[in-house]
Amino acid sequence: AATEAATDAELRFIERLAAGTATPGGGAASAYAGAMAAGLVAMVARLTLGKKKYEHVSTEMAEIMERADALRAELSRAVTEDSAAFEAVMAAFQLPKTTDEQTAARDAAIERAYHGAAAVPLRVARAAAQVLELAHRAATHGNLNAISDAGSAAHLARAALAGAALNVRANAASVQDRSAAEAWLREVTELEARTAERLAAVERTLSERKG
Image (cartoon, rainbow, N blue to C red):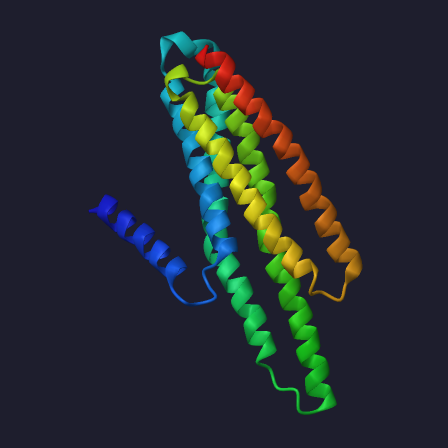
């Protein structure tokens, strides 16, 4: 019953993505991809733990599993948080602007909402980068029979980061606080560069270990 409920929830999320509504959108989907990536990393770690052949990496795998589970929970929460943040932006635009005071309050609310809408995908990008790092370690030292899953995790994490970065950039273009916007842009650019290198390292590792 629990499995059926989880499957139903997943299907509902996909249906909601396909609906003609603004949320959930690319940001929520990116967080979902990141959560799936973290789940795969944890799976590889669990398939490695307890195997005599991999006793020498048991401590590392236990650490990877624990961190991956925590990141999966964080990214799962971000799925709904991203939608809520964008809905806050839309709500701010609906505020009245008849008087100067109302206009000023509306502008301030819009600015706050855009900051909130940027914060969630920025957290997703950071978490996805961490998942990719863990995927590389899992691919390098994990159960050889599951390293393709580690590779899948790495690609999903990179996709999650790319989608989150698009949302950060979209919100950065809309805020008045250009100093904050530039900081967000610098960070996602650095994350993208670092994870591109890490993904290439995962591919090399997969090729070498598959022999």
